[in-house]
Image (cartoon, rainbow, N blue to C red; front, side, top):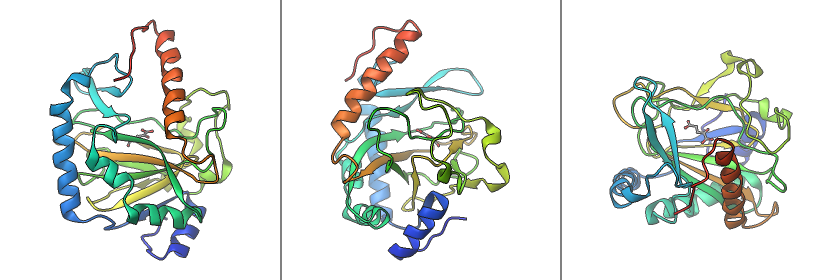
Length: 259
Ligand SMILES: O=C(O)CCC(=O)C(=O)O
């Protein structure tokens, strides 16, 4: 089970053992209040970006109606000074430096809105076998709304990260078969605004549909250790877009763009 310990050495030991940690109350209530207002503002001010051809946007089906529903801005910090401040908050970077034993570099940033009814994610690891993809990749989850089982909080499985990549290393995204993990070991990341969870790129995770009446808005901020390639964010998004274009084209969708 992951810890809520705050001492860097204890956190680092827990992260090494479990592949994830939870830290309660890293951010203040007023910061999370501003984050929620920002998430609302982005939907209004950047409504024009919500297009199924725009590679910035991710869509998921509603499990009740089948409707294809806007779910994510990826990236988000170039739209949102508030999200960028959270991503570069000295408190957070200090926490990550404690886990890495060296500075962290922001690699990727997305805001997942997960509105009511929207499907979750199948079991997977975030690490993908692209040339030079950082093995130190980790993700910080910052909930804007309380996350619980009803709204489909992220679920992690302690210890499995020790096995490294659990799918073929062919550069493709693979879901993991459900029996890769022992469901009895599932840890539901039930978090209050202000809490954060950190999980590594080899930590299997998934989420259930949002069956509540409100959105489950969470910032997913990914980092790499400085010694593992330095600042790779711009390169990552170039590679990600090239990869997405090929993936969409396989389904006959060739009119994609990024804005
Ligand atoms: O929304 C979630 O709970 C999980 C999201 C996720 O796993 C991902 O974006 O890779």
